[in-house]
Image (cartoon, rainbow, N blue to C red):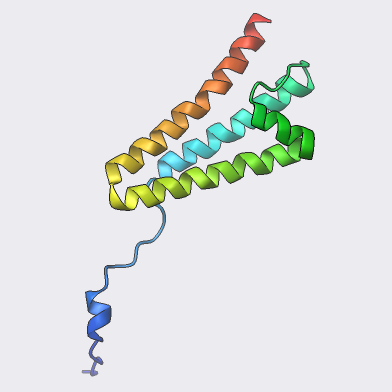
Length: 120
């Protein structure tokens, strides 16, 4: 048999390393909904002549074009995911609720834009 060196006490006392993220399924849906928001926004702005209702997004488009809006959108996605991870590490149910709320809130502008497409 081979001798296994003893582990230092500090390593044994450390919590196990965590891999991945806390709510991967939620984040997958959140990224999908965010991408759909960009697709619908591009469609209604570019092809139908609508105006951006979100003041911040409108200013980003004016300053940096649609590419800037894409960067801004996914910077906000990253920010929300980080918040969910930080909160979820301490309070898992609250972190999951935040991730679920992010998805639900992100669906609203898509639903409104699609409704506008049907009505107009």
